[in-house]
Length: 87
View 1 (cartoon, rainbow, N blue to C red):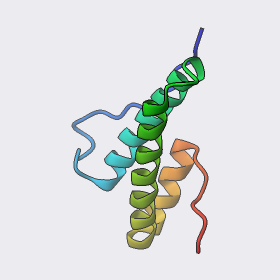
View 2: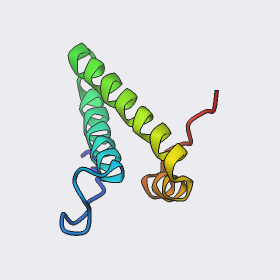
View 3: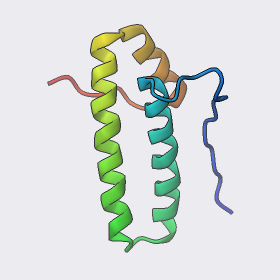
């Protein structure tokens, strides 16, 4: 049996257009796709979709770290993801 650990946020608390909510929804999609790809290793279209979503989330995280560092730190701690490397 596969464990599904998706983070949920009530819709009235979050603005669906906010950067934080978009990062949260991308993270849920990433978790869902990675669990799918564990079963279907040769699903190359889903792998491509996963890479695209990862890139979108990375760009949004970079934007959030520049605009609001406190929210960025709080969000990556809540989502249990690594900090992006600074170039």
